[in-house]
Amino acid sequence: MKNQWQILIVDDEAAMRESLAAWLQEDGYLVDTAASGREGIAKAAEKDYVVYCVDLKMPPGIDGIETMTEIRKLHPDAAVLIITAYATVDTAITAMKEGAVDYLVKPCNPREISVVMERLIRVKTIERENQVLRHKLTGQYAFQNIVSRNARMLSLLELVRNVAGYRSTVLIRGESGTGKELFARALHQCGDRAGGPFVAVSCAALTETLLESELFGYEKGAFTGAQERHKGKFELADGGTLLLDEMGDISSKLQADLLRVLQERRFFRVGGSAEVGIDVRVIAATHVDLEAAIREGRFRQDLFYRLNVIEIHVPPLRERLEDVPLLARHFIEQLSLELGKEVAGISDAALRVLIAHDWPGNVRQLENAIERAIVNSREGVLSEADFAFLTGPSSAEADALSPGSMTLEEIERRTIAATLRKTQGNVKEAASVLGIDRSTLYEKLKRYDIANPHRPS
Image 1 (spheres, helix red, strand yellow):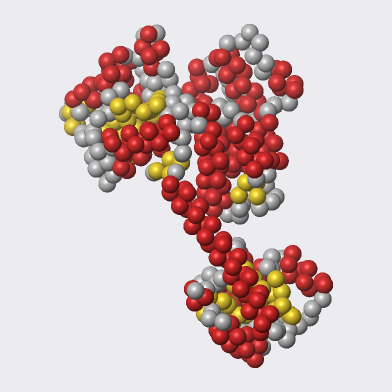
Image 2 (cartoon, rainbow, N blue to C red):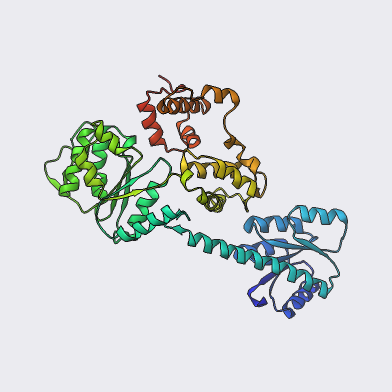
């Protein structure tokens, strides 16, 4: 039905406005009019019309090209039809270069206007249907911001739905960047604790003393600088969910403290003598092989059993490559809005590049790659060239990082050190390039004893 479409006519000549409006109304469209470019822009700010019919010459105000430019700032997808009495090749080319979908020459033939308008409306209808279809597809393969069509992932999401309502502790395992926190948030949002707080703490980013204070809080005077009582993450999460992220490397003392809290649901603040009771669902996440850590004496077996009541093992992206196109389109739609840069999609050649990549940094690395491509892209569709940075290091760098007889840890250590040199010591940028979060990078710098070459000593 045509009456769902609204059209705006912008023309300084009253006779032209009225006649054009009458023609379009007879065709069944809803029509608004504006007597100047400024008035047209003001109306566009209040409503997004399906088509804007804009006169090219509107003295003494702004002309049609300027009006179109301002309208497209408000509505990047606006379909602007330029109307001119000055039909020259130059004006037509200028109008089309600036974004006009078509142009008509005065005096306008009613039948020609009807034909052009029907064509534009048909295109807009297809665009709207495609948008609805995209949203349906996203909804079909998305759950709580987790996008996947992989069978293992769908099985995990079903597990989340089944256990979300219980207080049982959950252990989420998987490589860095696989989306462990998204699963934790999904567990929180799908259960009866959704109305309570969701609190996350990165255990790898803090020393033992700081982490203890961060988790359990402290009393006034507990240590130098403790000028007042401070609630810890357990108290802040009371009635909700606490995510202990990257908790595979916490100290033996904190492991014992956590075991007590999980068993008794009570704890002491640092420097305190009164126990604090809590009602918190604990979710632990780690990329560490906890069974190996237990064998090496670095992790308590009883704590592992207490944490591992329900286990969710998130597969790496390389094991679910069918999700790469889905995730790529999801990130393009999301990031193009956040960055304020219009990107319509991604080419098949570019998708082949993404699918061929091994993604050591998993979904987080893919998201970073999409963002980098959007920022650097000069076209409306991401192409293979926009992902040239994924093709690998130069031959000299490749030789320097060649595995040879090196252990996996040595390869990782050298890769991290080389990336830090490339980013001139910028840890945030290095973490982005490696596809891991900063806390994980800091933990690896500490583990491998890598000094930042650009940090003052």
